[in-house]
Amino acid sequence: MDTTLYRQLVRSLVYLTITRPNIAYPVHVLSQFLSTPRTTEYAAVLRILCYIKDTLVHGLHFSTHSFLTLQTYSDADWGGDPTDRHSTTGYCLFLGDSLIFWRAKKQTFTARSSTEVEYYALADTTAEVVSIR
Image (tube, rainbow, N blue to C red; front, top):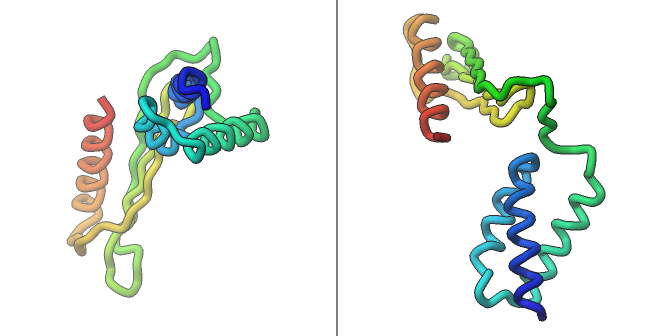
């Protein structure tokens, strides 16, 4: 197996994760084998390439007319789960017009007010934004 070709393919895939974040984890795993790749890792790289070929229209699209500003939206419901009265927090991050991250999760506590729920939702969102820097 050609180690140089494997390295070139993985490096190209790393670059491609900018617009295809769904392949970031498998590419990360495969990049750990740059020094001594086996045939199984090479087969995985080829499988990712086939996946990309079959899903060319998928991925993030950055418009030339869009400013690359980071925008964040956050929301929460107050006691939305009727069984335990826990709230659900949701947030999403946009880079320009492209959605780059989203999450919805159930909070681990029972809030006493809608203000408290929204505060925690904003705190979770802020923590996520700070962690991606």
